[in-house]
Image 1 (cartoon, one colour):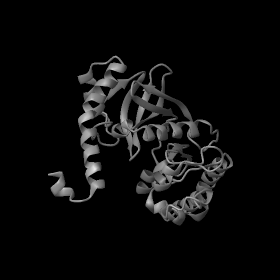
Image 2 (image 1 turned 135 degrees about the horizontal axis):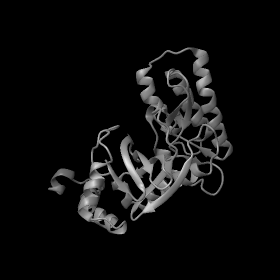
Image 3 (image 1 turned 120 degrees about the vertical axis):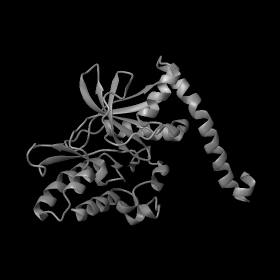
Image 4 (image 1 turned 90 degrees about the vertical axis):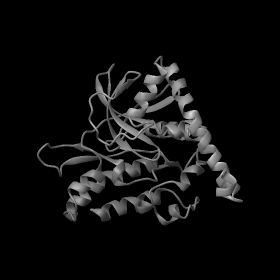
Length: 275
């Protein structure tokens, strides 16, 4: 059947074989994860599927406690992307809410993807800026890795723009973008380009319950960031990633030598234009 469907395309055939093998191994992976954290394999598979790591839970679904992984009690799925899923969770030991990010389950079988996930945590953890989300912890529970970071209940800027479409007052727009520009400049001073700056990666720390226009923008998600100075400059896998609407021309063209701080400036300009 594969010969009939794929013809002489050996690359396509190889990819189909890889996906089939991934599908066959997924159940075994869940069993291994369950064993590692001392849980029943069947219940763990059911829990992971129900919380959206291996299933299709709707964003912002509130169905009580979704389950507990380690010391984290999962409350709701708040973000889903190509790299992973983000949950509002309660750290039961420290008694504080956290944003808990897990890589997509199919990505855990790839060492490169796991390294990218931990690389995001290492980059984010070294930052200290009032407009960058703080990473509390990165860890592994059995085969499942996670990043626990600050939680803000204002949602993301993409959702805010849907509720409050522009055009907005130019002075207000400039005041909003200024702290983001400073946060990006801070990252660049650390030798890091974000490369995926967009509204969904801007979390809102609300400063007024009555005025939806008053909030502090917080930049997050360094999953495809590039270290453009120092020993990690060989991060070539990030050059092919990003969000087309916000990509600078050099990033869309995968021009490795030209991608850098200016690519973030371009993306921030697109965000400003949307306002």
